[in-house]
Image (cartoon, rainbow, N blue to C red; front, top):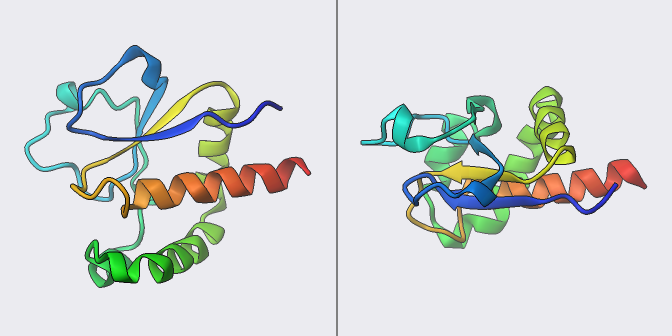
Length: 124
C-alpha cells in the first residue's frame, strides 16, 4: 500500500477538490458553521478526544506532548473509529477537519500522527 495521504485543515478554510474525503473530527459542531459550509463528508465525533481530555488540554502548547500521549490511549481503545479512518485513507486522500485556531496543537494534528504511525505498523 502506498503512503497514506492524510492532511489536516481548519473547517473554516474554504473546501478544495484536492481535500478528498473531508472528515470533521471535533466532538462539538463548529461554532457558526452550517452543514452546507462545512462540506464535511463525515462527522466522526468519536474520533475526537474525550470531553475531560479536551478540557484538561485547553489548547495549551505546554501540555501538547502529554495530550498526544493521553489521546493515543483513547484512540487505542476506539478501534472502530481508527479502522474507519484508515479504511478511508486506503482509498484516497483524507482531510481531517478541526475548528481550533491553533493549527499546530489540535486533535486533528495528533490524530493524523497517530493514524500515520498506526497505518504503518499495520502494514509491517
